[in-house]
Amino acid sequence: MADEKFLAASAKHPIVAGHAYKYGTAGFRMKADLLDGVSFRVGLLSGLRSRRLNGQAIGVMITASHNPAPDNGVKIVDPMGEMLEQEWEAHATRLVNAPSDQELLDTYKALASQLNINLSDPAKVIVGRDTRPSGHSLVTALADACAATNIQFTDYKILTTPQLHYLTRCINTEGTPKAYGKISEQGYYEKLSEAFVRALRGKKVQGQLIVDGANGVGAPKLNELLKIIPKDVTGFDCKVVNDDVLRPEILNLDAGADFVKTKQRAPPKPQPIPGARGCSLDGDADRLIYYWVDPESGFFMLDGDRISSLNASFIGDLVRSAGLEDEVRIGVVQTAYANGASTAYIEKHLQLPVVFTPTGVKHLHHAACQFDVGVYFEANGHGTVVFSQEAIRLFREKEPQSPAQKEALEVLAACADLINQTVGDAISDMLMVEVILAHKGWTLKNWATTYTDLPNRLVRVEVGNKDLFQTTDAERRLSHPPGAQDEIDQCVRKYTNARSFARASGTENACRVYAEAATRGEADELANKVAACVQ
Ligand code: 16G
Ligand code: ZN
Image (cartoon, rainbow, N blue to C red; front, top):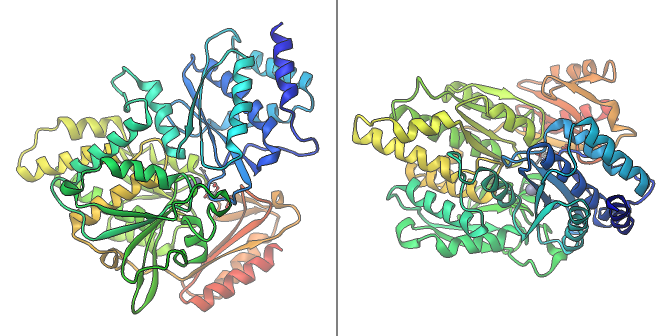
C-alpha cells in the first residue's frame, strides 16, 4: 500500500530524461521546467534527512537567487540553518537521478537501509520560496512527496532565503537554551528590529539609504521590517526601490547585487542620485553590495570584502573595549576572489588572521565556526558573522569594569542577535553596516578610504569539459590538467603585485579566471592571458 502510494505520487512528478542532475553549491538549479520531479525527490530526501536526525525539521528553499526569472532551484537546509551536509549532497544526486518511479523507490529504500533510517519514524519538512511564478508548483511537488511518505509538512510561502534558514533553526531550537527566535516571519522582523535598536545604543543613522531590491523577494520583506523599525529612535530613513515583484520578468533585470558586482556600476533605474548612500540585494536577499555615485569621481562600490573588513574592524575594537581580547578569538574567512588589498588590510592593519577556503558558503561558514567570532564574506556580498556560544555567554555575563566596557559588551551582544547566525542575510547585514557607520560616524567615502583595491578582472571562459580543471590550495592553484598551473605562473611572473587563478564554476559549465595587478590595464591583460591558458 505504502509503495503504491509512493509510486502513484512519483508518477505525477517525473524527472526530465536525458539530464544529469547534480546537487551543487546552489542545490539543484536550472530552468524551472526541468525541476518538478527534482523538487518531488528533494522532498523524499529531506524526509530521510529529518528521520536520520531524530525528526528535526529540514528546510527546503525554492529559489534561483540572482539568476534570470525563468530559472529556479531547490536547496536543502540542515537543522541549525546551515547548508546540507556534504555527504548528503551525493545522496541527493543519487536519488534525483533514479531513471524510473520503481528505481526511485528502490533507491529510496536502499538509502534508508544504508543510513539506518527507520521509515516509520516521524519527519518534518518546511519550505519557503522566492517570488518566481514557477515556485508555486514546485512547492506542490514537494508537498506531494511529503504526503506520500508521511512527512509533516509546513509551507511558509514566500520568504527570503535567510528567513527560511532562520525559521528552520527556530523550530529546532525552540524551548532549549539555544532558542533562536519566534517561529514566524513576524518573529524574524521583531528580532532584527529589536537588535538594531540595541546595537545602535542611542546613535542615529545619518542620511537616507536607498535599497535596490532587484525586483525580488527582499523588497517586500524589507518593507515589512521597516514598518516596525522605530524611525524616531534609530534615525533610519530607508527607501526601497526596484520593488516590483508583480512583473516576474523584471526580476534581477539590470538590478541587484550580482548586476552591480559584475557590471561594476549602479542599477540604471531609478536614476542614481549623486552622493546618495545605496545598496543592492540579490533576488533572494542573501547578498549585499553598497555603493554611491560620486558627483566628481563617479561610481564606487563597497563589496563583500569591504563589508567583511568593516565588520572585523568594528567587532575587533568592541572586543578590545570589552576587555575580551584574550578570550575571544576573531578571524576572517575569505576566498581566492577576495581583493589582495583587503587581505593585507585585515592582516596588517587590523592584525587579524585570515583563512582561505574554496568558493561556496558551506566552506566559509564551516571555517568561520572555528573562531569565537568568525567573519566571512565572499567578494560577491554573501556572508555573515558567526559567534560561538561561549562568546555570546561572555558578552552577556562578564561583569563590566567601566561604563565603556558595559557599552561594548551590550553592543556586542546586540550584534550577535542582529547578524543572522545561520547564513549570509542581506537585510541583516545591511542593518549591521548601518549600525557600524552610525557608531563610527562614517560616510561611505570614509569607509572607502580604509584601503585601495587592486585593479582586478574576472572573465568567464567557455571550455569543453570544465571538470578537467581541478584545484588545490583553496582554489588558488590548478592541480589538473598537468602543466596548466605552470603556464599560469609564467604569465603572472611578468607583472608586479599580480595574482591570478582559474577554477571550474560550480554553477555553470565554464571556467572562471580572476586576475589582479598593479594597474587596470595589466589586470585585464593578465586575465586574458590566463584565460588563453585554460581555453
Ligand atoms: C553559489 C554559492 C556562492 C558562490 C557561487 C559561485 C552558496 C549559497 N552559493 O552561488 O557562494 O559564490 O556559487 O559560483 O554557496 P561559481 O562556482 O559559478 O563561480
Ligand atoms: Zn542569493
